[in-house]
Image 1 (tube, rainbow, N blue to C red):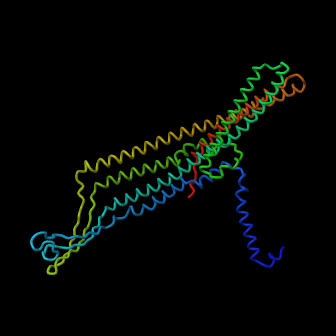
Image 2 (spheres, rainbow, N blue to C red):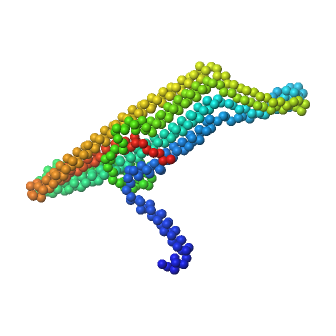
Image 3 (cartoon, rainbow, N blue to C red):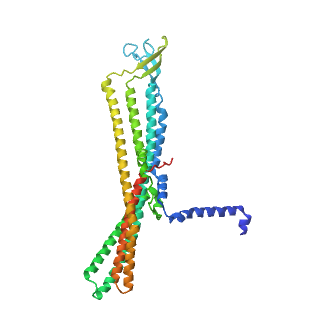
Length: 426
């Protein structure tokens, strides 16, 4: 160790600080190539989403409105002049006429306790609705992120398989060109291979576009993490059991949001009904007259007169009741819609799983055996290279079809994530 580090603690402090800064700067690069799993992508999106942050602020705003909703309205201060003369020699005098009074006072409106309690309950229901909306937004976010992640994952893997097909087709084209020189290949066969190559190149470009588009969508939620390579993924296990699907739907955040909307409509209907009962107000005023006259104090009570209720109150009550029925119908429709979507996704997942199993257990092993047979025949002089390449291309085609089925299964898995309860990050 150098003399500076042995004798001077300040030097050691500088070295440690430099090492910490260096580690901080290099850490992002160390994680840049770390594979991004679906679970990590969902967690990152949940933490970084501005939409969820905005909804949390909406919850805070709704909660802060609960206490004021139960309070009386602010009192009103008033001041002015009563009975000011405007003619004769006393015109505009504040002290000559005994009826002239300068006054100042306060008015307090007293809303019925039942109405204030109902308004407080309404504010609480709104806060509960905003909380349910946060969970619903999180569920939708998880579904969208999963769909984009799955799309990119399988687009990249499909591109790799297409690249293998391009390589096989290129080998077949080279073999046919050699056969053309020995008159063993027809020009039409070579032309068909050339067309296949161009078609495969177009497919490869299509999957590159899908991968880039999915990455751009992921960048919206994940930022720089969207550039990381994706981890391996196999949606072999369902995120929920079919037997508990109905229970999941009943407790789904969107259904709970609509349930809160029903409670809000019911409370608003109760407020409209309570509005038929009058409120009252109290007014207290101090009145000052001229120096030769007595000052005065006035007290006044005002009561609302809820007349003409058939035109002013009852239509509002009917409107709120209709809104409550609307909310109930929307909830029932949402439950049916979610059940249908979930069952459809389950059907897609199960069908893709069963067909994938058939490919793994029967079709792909047969294709590999066909390649081995053609290759053995070619090596033994009993077959040509074209048969080997054709068998190999058939195997690759089956791999592409199998990957497409896996993509369908994963897409159904991403859709089912919307029906899994997600815990909101507070």
